[in-house]
Length: 123
Image (cartoon, rainbow, N blue to C red; front, top):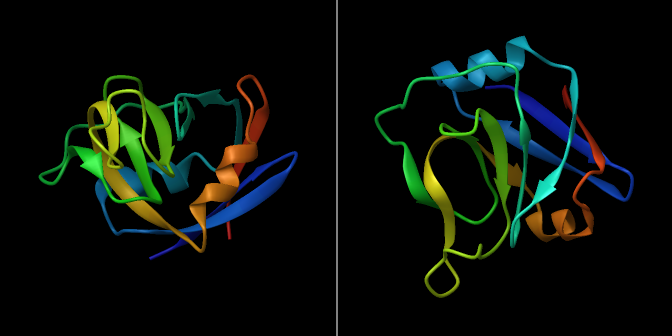
């Protein structure tokens, strides 16, 4: 499947997308720019579409997961615990479709600040 690049003023990360309906929707709206929100070790930002829950939608995901947060129509990038995590798990406030996985160390997202402009483009 395709790869995307997520860029902000202090860095960038590349992710490999899964072949899912939501991932295909995401590719269809790229490139896009949005205002980042930070919630614990999660960066999320609004996307211009909605999606249905997929069979493996979950609120607990792997570190580095690229998710479509269903309740917020947002791309959620998890690189560590959030305020609702138990222990060191990566937990969203509600279920999300897993659209991909970041390549390399996702902790670079720690330099993203709320309100910062974030850009997503196809590789």
